[in-house]
Image (cartoon, rainbow, N blue to C red; front, top):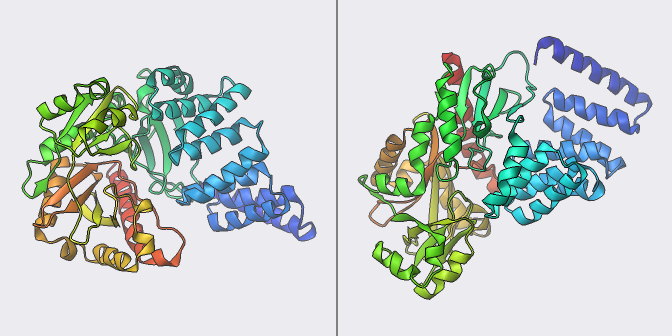
Length: 482
């Protein structure tokens, strides 16, 4: 934002506030004040102003939508979902309300429910690009790639570049963000703060080589899921070849980070134990020959089945016995399934632990330690909220990672970081009793989730702030090289 524009916004805000002194309950003035505060990057004050609007009109569409957007940008997904839902319920004929709520549902893993709202939006506006984009993502998540195909084209052909408004002061690093139309992107909304960076997103699959690239100081390849985004990564390589700007996460370094290839190349590293991973056609697994096929490939039960391209435990199952294989495979979307050797990560206390460490510009940043009685460990479903002793254990990990993990595990982390060669990436793992690293996942798509507002999570806040600051500094430093 230029100094001139900031001055105009501040003058407009002063004028609105002067009018509010005389007419404190005029809804349009209250809403205009909230908008101006948001445009000036004063998010906390803008949030309070939008709430003031909603105290007078709980159905105010603009206040609900903008408040949800602010909540989402600060990592408060539950609050955003609530506001978007209220907007959709009170404005059922507004396609934007339906699309926003559907997007929040999809991000929350509710693809089936999201699909219905996208379809409702398309009945109101059949040519709405955003509704086609969302419906394609929902159908893909539901495993119906064939039905998604026409919606990818309708949603992104001619709509593949999105310029995000910059709300900061003065000049800012101009970031060209390469993303895939699918869901395998690095979550950058907490990193690329629109008060610090001027961001233009380019959906790589629909890149038009006949048009010049948007102006940029740094190119950030946010396409991170090699199993899901092969086409996007191929297109990203074309785009990168046309830019002279510094690059974060070259596509050729992301391509070999699929689960199967990672298991093969990282499992050979000293101190790393990686599971055997093979891609298998689903129709083989549902057939009577499925167990024999897996046995011939070297698998034993129990084993894990996972649909490629899905995260946070979605379409991920443990199969205890051969008799359970066909039923589990039928629940997986898509034509292929990853068969994964089961590595028992349970410690002496019976709890499975999963550590997440990010590496940003070569440095390590601990993000979390989660412990659970279930084999499938995810922070939000773990035992962390109910046990003070586990939170104390995590706090020590966040503050003294090398001491907690030990030399052997730290050395293994270093080898994984060097083998991947990513500017921004991370690894999920457990620690074996001999100090070896049990590899779960290592790629660019690791999510950095801020802790919830409850004071019991205060010990996590500085660690999360450090890793987000490091990611922002990475972008700033690369842009300076320009």
